[in-house]
Amino acid sequence: MNLPLILSPLSELDLVTISVSALLFFAARPICSLLNDSDGVTTRASMMRILNALIIIAILTDAYLLQHKSEVTSQITRSLMVLYFAVVATQIINFFVRQRFGKKRITNNSTSISDTYSSRGLSLIVATVVTLIALISCLRILGFNSLLEAGGALGIAGIALAMTQAAWAPDIIAGLIILNSRLCEEGDVVQFNMDGDKIIASVFRTKLFHTELLDLSNNHRLMIRNNKLRDFGIQNLSRFASAKGLRELMLFNIGYEHSKSDVEGMIQRAFIECDKAEGAREEQFAPEIMVYDTADYAVTWAVYYYIKDVKRLLAIKQIFRAYILEESIRSGISLSTPDLQSNNVTITEQSS
Image (cartoon, rainbow, N blue to C red; front, side, top):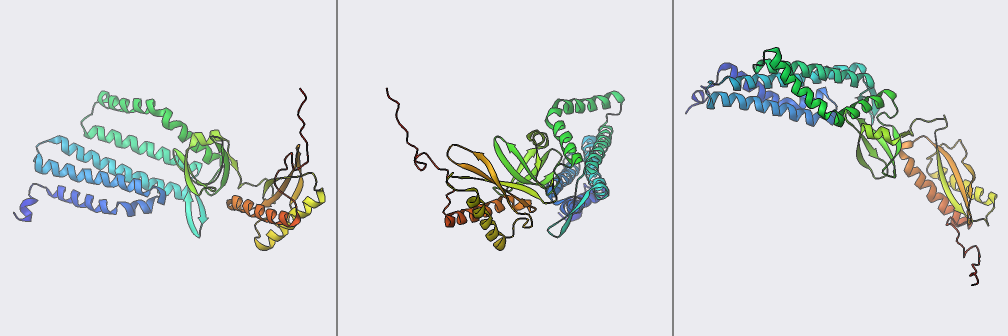
């Protein structure tokens, strides 16, 4: 059997459609990379490839199995084409929306465009309008021409959305509020409590339903629903309340036998050594050393200092603690909380 005989059931239009669909199948990822950020490329490319494959399968089924005797497969093919162009059109329009209303950021010597309240809102409107047009077009292609039939089909879709709105609507609204308030933009370092644990993380990206963060403590990504993230109560450590930088705190328990001048001298010497070697803090502002609490067995000393490299917040604190520990050993000042025995407190049993 020669090639023309194999292709004889296919019309010229079928051959053109299959060829274009096959070309677009392999070009899906480059197209999505051009129109979208790197984080959403895989999902969108997969969606386009699935639609291309379904179009090819529908055409081959209609030609070889049904021999063009059924109108249903032709209707399905045209509907799949409408859905494909709707996906591509949404990406193209949103690309220009992001270029016009997005916010440009320079990270690691590369320029990226992140969503803003305006771009995200317009993207949702575009997606809604294109989806409605595509849905109505598919209904007309499938033969639902009367207002009652089309309205019934749209009504079923509306009921499905209404029944599931509790799962997706709060996160979309919360995401828009987060973007509009600019409380935590991409690259900001935030702090919040989640299930009793204090989380310090860098905002990676605010998506439609969730926000992705990079945990600075464990160096892994977190995915948190937008609505839940708002409930945590976010502290943005990148937005300084003072031009000095972020004011950080360290606490130490030191026995009563050490005077104020001894403790202050020890901490100041540790910071001087650290500044020479590390240069991690804002050195023009001297550390603030003060009594935080006077407990039964020890004095809790507070040390305040200023930093601007908030992404290294945890590492800087660890560096400072190491230098203060080293200087405390040289100065003979213990950082361990004194107990009853070391304070020579005698416990006497009560007489019966």
